[in-house]
Image (cartoon, rainbow, N blue to C red; front, side, top):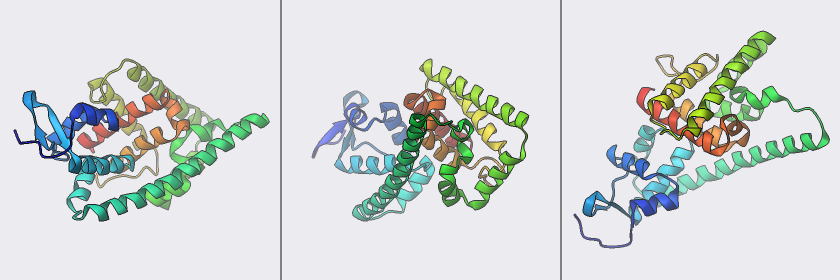
Length: 258
C-alpha cells in the first residue's frame, strides 16, 4: 500500500463524477487500461490527478466509438499529455459539429409535426442508411458502404421491407425488455441479444466488415454510440437508458468476439 502524496479520489467518488460504474473502472484496471494510483484497506482503489486525466481521455475515445483495445493503442503511442489533450479537443470540436447537425435534424422533425405534415417513419427507423448520416457513414466507412446499403434498400420490395422492419422492431422490443429487467450488459441474455444484433447488421449489404467477413468491431461499437447520441434511434430502445444498455452490451460483445 503506497503513501498518499497528493489529491486522490476513491473509486466511488470517481464513479459518481464521471458516470462510469465502479465495475467499469475495475475492468479498466484488470485489462491494464487504467491502474489506480494506490490500493487502500480492503482493496479500495484510489485515483490521483494523472489517473483522472487518463480516464478523461479514455471516456472521450469511448464516446468517439473506439474499442478498448484501440484506446490502449492510442494511449500507448502518446507521449506528451498536453499534445494528446489538444488532439482530443479537436475531436470534441468535430463531435460538436456532428451534434449540431443532429440538433438541426430534430428541429426539422418538430417543425414537420407542427405543420401537420407527414413524417417519413422508415427514414427515422432505418438507422443504417438514414440520409442525415450519409456524410458520417461515408467519412467513417467509405462511400461504397453507404451506396451498397442504399441500393439494397431501394431494391427490395414492400413485403421484404415490412419483414425487415418487423425483425428490427422485435429486436428493439427485446432490448427494451432486457433493459427493464435490470440485467448487466455482460449477462448471457444481454450478450445473446448483442449476438442477434450483430447478425442482423451482418445481413445488411454495405455493413463494414473485417477480414473474416464479420461486421467490423469499430462499426458495431460506433453504431451503439450513435443510438445514445441521437434520440431518434434511442427511442427504438426505450430512450437514453435503454440505448446506453444496448451500447454497453454491444461493446462487451465486440470486445469478446469481433
